[in-house]
Length: 295
Image (cartoon, rainbow, N blue to C red; front, side):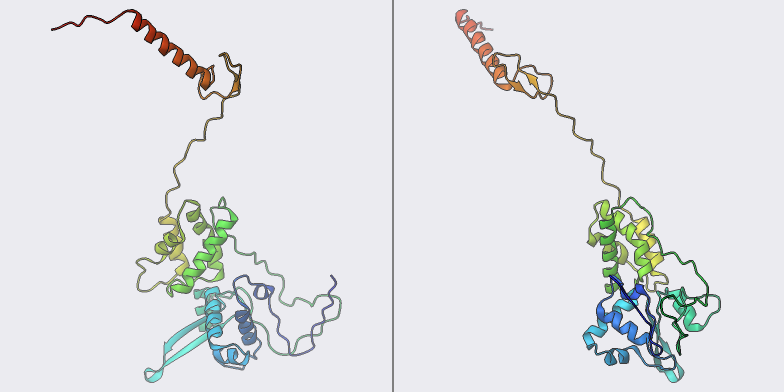
């Protein structure tokens, strides 16, 4: 397949492939995020207005916003301002941010830098057809986060563990995991499943007895998944290999598979036992009745 792409000269927004191909974001969540990121920096509009402009219904907007918050693209805080009024502050980012990074970006702290720059606004530079644009910021090494150990957990169990963590994040407000947190905790959750735990066991271990305030949901989940890890299932010895086939030593000359060290098949052993019983019975009858002895 051939593709020939020419960037427009104006009014366009660059979106990373991570957002377009995100495995856990619905189409409405991706549309809402891209719509909000496409607005100029001077526009200070809440997220629900972008949802209305994008044609997203109220129920779909609520689900899309929940997904974006769970993955770390949207953060919001409810702060009290002058005269006791409350104001909600929202942060929409083109990259995944942890809670600490989001607070630093909100407060403008110079010590913490987001994992990727915010999308630039304004006129783009000229782009000749046939080659990539010049990278003005230099190359950055930013390898993707690797799943946490143990690495011996099968991939299907890791994937299922990630789905359970996502479900817990959606249902429990104190345990809001972003995409990076779920990727790092999925292997531990898969280890639970490998040891025979159920999805209910995982949810109870993560949510039972939560403190009133959770400062780091990912650290708390990692501690609980490690500390409460169930014991591995008991080792069962493998079954012994079956005995080789053997020719019956009796009169049938049949081939059979012995269970132990027997040399005759079952039918021949049964015939021999019946013959021995009949012989003993015959001897007993030949001796006659015995005289009873009285004490």
